[in-house]
Length: 68
Image 1 (cartoon, rainbow, N blue to C red):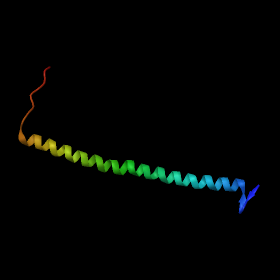
Image 2: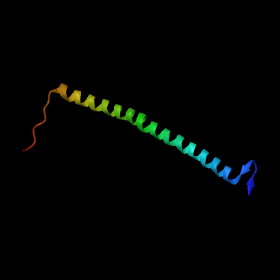
Image 3: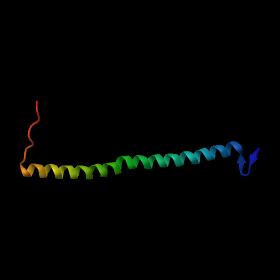
Image 4: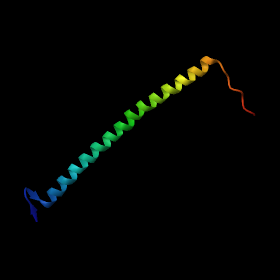
């Protein structure tokens, strides 16, 4: 059986190749998201934590120690 423009095997290989390239591109985009965007969100969260810590230090209040 042949398809227009080549054999069935050629069509299967071409289809798998195109699918592999598409899946590879999606994986690369996901890795970029993991490495870049999560870093941006973590940086924003840490800025808030640092601000709260500096505010706590500037007030000079020390919490009472817990029982030992």
